[in-house]
Length: 259
Length: 255
Image (tube, rainbow over all chains, first blue to last red; front, side):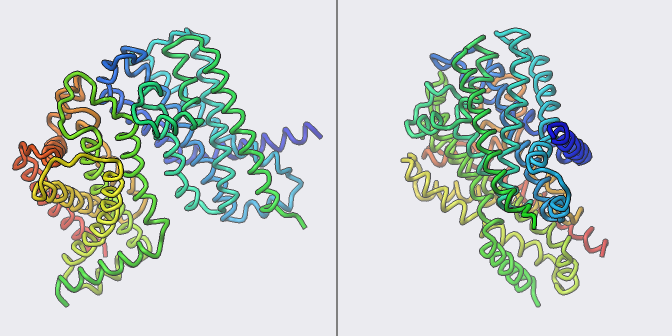
């Protein structure tokens, strides 16, 4: 039974990976856009390092995690849009006629986004290192950063899948993208929380899980081994994954109602 | 049927489409607002960076950028609509039925203007609620919105030129990525003098830098290089009008 489930997950994951890699838009945009923004913003905001209390003298070290977080948002859009297309085209209905289990579909569907997440994490890291980013946590920290980046892609892709199952159309998934982006903007992505001057913004950033995801990644680069930041980052990633998968599972039951 | 009647008819259709489709209307409205909140709220401490000499406050400093950004993207998003019209066949029917085809460009531009005016209104209300300092007089403010209006025209002419040439929504990244890049390669977060390295070199040569500087100086009530800002904006609009008209000709030839 357990092997059957694993096989089903493998089949759906393989399909998801192949489908993602076959769409140039799903590959090029998540690779180039975060890097472009990183190049522009890390230079445009470099003078922020002159602020008293800024944790590093190299803004790129501080800003690198932004690319990983933005990549995770792209994972949400990719996974969501792909599943919405399956709803649109009737693939999900046809799947309901097979013994495929809901859990296999959900986990497998995230395969493409996670594979893309791994590729983009390696690319962002390579670009960062080649432009002089120095990891205070060394090689183990780099490996942990990659792990957390892929986990973040998984959790945000799960949100994308939930939105797709709830809305049932690619257009609806795309229209939710600005809202996900909003979470990124209202976070500590540009400045440490203690340096954010406006009270409401600092409070919003403190209540925003995205801040903790970014800060966990950032801690590996500029602090070293900050256990609290890492626990919060991994904790929020796992919590988001579980909640999103739970909600998606509930929606899937309705979508794949078997008679 | 005159150019004006073609333009007004098309503008009316574009406006109705927008109002009836919140999914088309709200996301483009959200982006500038998000940027404004994130930049003006999250980065306001940057005004304490040594050498930050803008007298109007950080909210005003960011407001001008976001206003120009919303104007450009109001045009770009209308370009998506043009591409969609050609994909759906409406564009070809429009070419057949409009005797004065320059009215088509003007009509879409009026649609883009309506889209931007609604975003700009909301943005201005949010900025005022955020206690943005306005140092400029009524004429100065007229200048700020005038620059943004020209930016809106530039946005639609650029995106329209692409849409007429490719006639598919898949050309979307080609419409928005260059606009995005040219905007963000200007002094977005701090004044030009505080940029260094390659971004300073690029920003110094970027036309948007001059438009942005003119707008910011007008809002602060200390007009500086306004003629250069308006001149560059107007010259860009004229060049892009030629680009859009040639694009329309390509669409006509494609039939």
